[in-house]
Length: 410
Image (cartoon, rainbow, N blue to C red; front, top):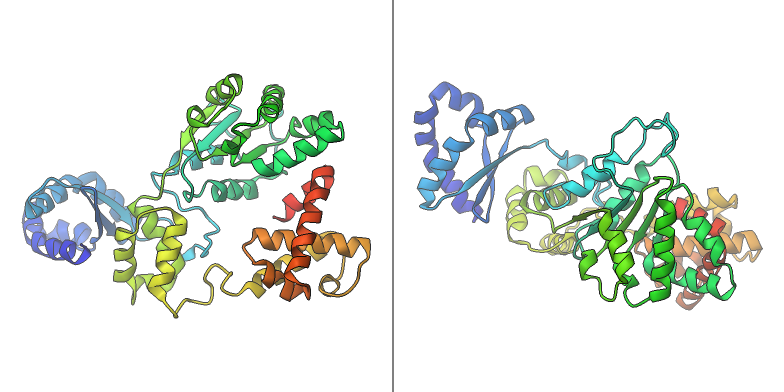
């Protein structure tokens, strides 16, 4: 489709030049380049943001008319600048979210919740005005749209600690404290005047005791105004077996959907993965891949990796070189627990080193390393790594302090 689009653009430039004048065309339109055609919309790139704004304001209608006439069907036109999103500056992960129509609302709301560093958040004067008058936020969307990544980005921007639970993890903690008759302590922890994020909230389906507990927590949190953010695969109305009062509580907050990346989001993400070659040698392949790949970010990564074959760049997701990930996490854990990095991979079984080693294994697993890879770097078997992670999970259920340390390291 891209070659066809380029051929059409070459044909209509003469008519467009006659329509707007040669001087105007050379100044503003000559640098336009078509990059995508999807769902009746042609996407162009301008050389600068100023040019994109100017063309969008003054010439979009004219471009749409001549392109539609050439194709024989009515088409819309969207203009972006080549530097929007700083494609090449994005890390492969990427470290900065790719923002497009699919997640723009969620991104803007989360950004408005980041308090100024010079003020105490959620008490007294707040320098930022929240976009919506709410304390509970529910972001829902299918798997692969970047809900968890966007929330982790937000947590990284916050000047204070945010409580973070995946729903399965919260269930295990709740079951443990219920057995130990320490539910009030967990309630106090979750109701604290700190931001609270619960990921995979839809997995609360069919768990009436946990639902009743969470409903009480949400009611208590309304008093102090610290944000509570739920990420769910489903809209609150579509979560199976959700108790009516809890569903009503969720619906009373700000509910926003997130969708799979659109054409520009896909293009930005693929350019970030590709790096500099996406602007020169492989630009046509990247643009064609953005147009034909359907799905979320995992599908985009997989399609991009297939397109590279055996020539994947060294910086691809770090996980191509798991040793880099392991060393980075090892050094962070060693610094936090005040132990020697080499001791983590040694034979020491002291309590401090053993606990730090468990945390290292857990975080490496969360970063995407396989049990066998972690075992190789630690000098342990894969079974030993599994046991360490299982043992740490039990410790996390009992210790809010340890959970806080692990959250800070993630």
